[in-house]
Image (tube, rainbow, N blue to C red; front, side):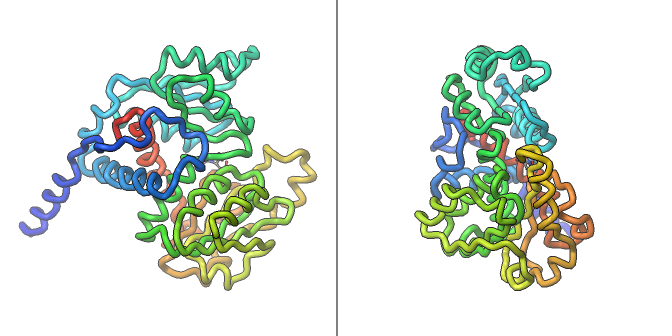
Length: 334
Ligand code: NCD
């Protein structure tokens, strides 16, 4: 008994000290696209996130000084539960404060441009987070703002912080990033999380990537070309047979992005093509993981929730820790 107590307190002590790293490769930078991350920066970020997560568990008070006195302008012009809440919580757990804006209460409603909004927010905040329905909006806002800006989803474009948290979840749950068999499923056309995730996965070694989607929702050609240039072994298909599931280390399901379709008919034509349930995963290895950025609608049945491989309710915790790391990182304190 005594031996066990000593072991616990020693490991708590070891992980309770948070000191910013000597290198700060994210300091002062915008995080607009997953394309800015090479393998070294992915590894650095996930390494710092690992320590951040251990510290958050063992001694959360040790983190309250990291961003004390700093203010985040958290601007969400599209609905969000996880991303907005986790950025707010991340800032609070680092001792900083949050200014929340949305499309109803900000002057966007009066027709103010992104450029002007971010020029103004620059006077109030030390760091910006933006979610916006228009692809390219994060780049536009980042060009206007002097303070670092983090893209929390720009239309059907990218969602780099979701992709980083997915990588953090994968490496934490599977113990590695290399030599993985990954299957991305569902709406690969409008799903911004998979556009960013594919770019990060392209930096791993020995990757086998399957892209399973309805024909009308195939991964954009530029993402496929990027994967090709990186030498990724990538197969596109329009079904998800059990042998593909059996070989997978990660199955990443996505929601069909109803809000981005040109018409209800176009949505209805593909909405129910990839509905997964417990039976779909009958051959999944015990060590594999099922991920989903959430929210889910009907594409992932609730009978999967109790499977040991289901990791989608763990992703939000990885998201909190990863976003703490990014906020500290762009402010030079990760
Ligand atoms: C995703 C998004 O907003 O792109 N949600 C999230 O941030 N976790 C996925 C989705 O909306 O389907």
